[in-house]
Image 1 (spheres, rainbow, N blue to C red):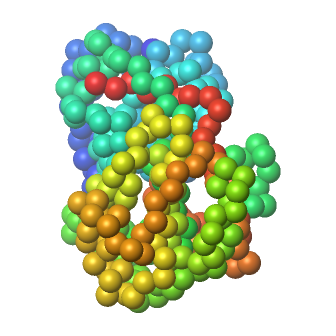
Image 2 (cartoon, helix red, strand yellow):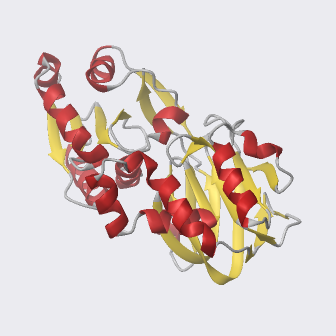
Amino acid sequence: MYIVIVNPEAGNGKAQVLFRKIQKDPLYNKANCRSFFTEGEGHAEKLARQVVEIHKETITAVVVIGGDGTLHEVVNGIINYPRIPISLIPAGSGNDFARGIRLKERGIKLFQKYIKRPEQFSVRLGRYLPRQQSKNRQRAFLNSIGFGLDGLVVETANNQKNRYWARKLRISKLTYSLALFRTIRRARPFQFELILDGKLYPVQEAMMVTITNHPYYGGGMKIAPKANIKNPAFYIMLVEPIKKKKLLALFFSVFLGQHIRMKEVRQVKASRVSIRSFERIPYQVDGQSGKCYDCKIEKAGISTTFYVD
């Protein structure tokens, strides 16, 4: 049995249109697919958890038709079942995880490949635990977790009014970039303590700190050009205090991965990261925003299995 979880709102309705086409493919019924539609933020996680707990003995794979946000929820919903393969059919506005695992096909062709000749790809995703949450609330992330300006930009992008107009004007792919322009005037360095693999890192303030599993975020930006999702360590990108005009230039250069040449940008690698501050730091994780005083990040001890083409 294949469990198909669809976010009908993803990609301005692109996911729902794509699902209707897949549903008409003869393989859909032949493979015993059962579909479920999400009904808002957080629902994909609850849905995935409930369905997998009921059908865990008969599930071949969970197919996700949506974007990075939907996939983030599904992965966390079945976090206790890492051996059940997850198959992503990207249909969101960013689709950075699809880039990170180098999916080539899209749409119906990708669905057919998953059913006929799936290849398994195991990867140790990131885990994060903001302060004031218990151990059993540790969560997984697919793409990146970022603090400071990165968190502020995503907070702005996720504002309901901004999301409404982005969908209405069909410019959802530009959501992060547009939010950056609205946020950059409020940008300021934040003070923090950074511990990498148990050692204090010599930096006390930065505009942003982003910890990533693979090169991409924000809808195709190459935040860490040399990162590889199979690497046992994260790539960590720090942007030191910088003038706002130069900060804007930095973000334009991120699309080509050229920002790493700027003197204000540092790159380091670590598999365990701890960030602490006396103020609540805005953060984003896979496009979802929040605030915390400190956060522990590490590579998961157990690999999650994905189908790839």
